Image (cartoon, rainbow, N blue to C red; front, top):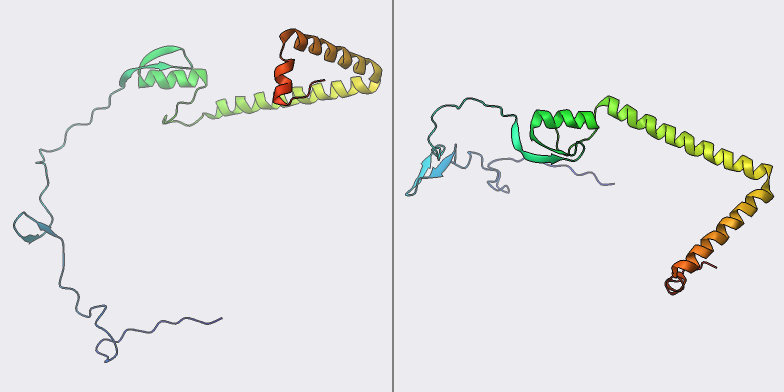
Length: 166
């Protein structure tokens, strides 16, 4: 693999150009156009400054409907309180999801996962204990659903859609 090396620029060498310029470009500082000519220095401010205004923090906001609380709110502090109470998270709110809300959500997901696992285990045990009874129950359920399908009149539409149901 070839190695690329750069050479040091030599000012005044007969084979070297004058770029980069040894003595600079002559443009130093900031310049602006005042309408007639180019003037050195920054342009004057567009608007006259009259000092600083005092900072005023307002809690009020436009009347907005809060989905979690199902009512209208006019105060940002009230909105944040309702978010916290209902477990809602408003897009662009200043606070992230609180830890207790996230913990409660994880516990609900864990409980749901455990319930699904228990239901699957129960169904598997019931099938292993008495396969004939489970198969008969599934067959009866299938017949009931076919009767409902016939009464609904959707059979023709399912065939047209290419769904096999028989």
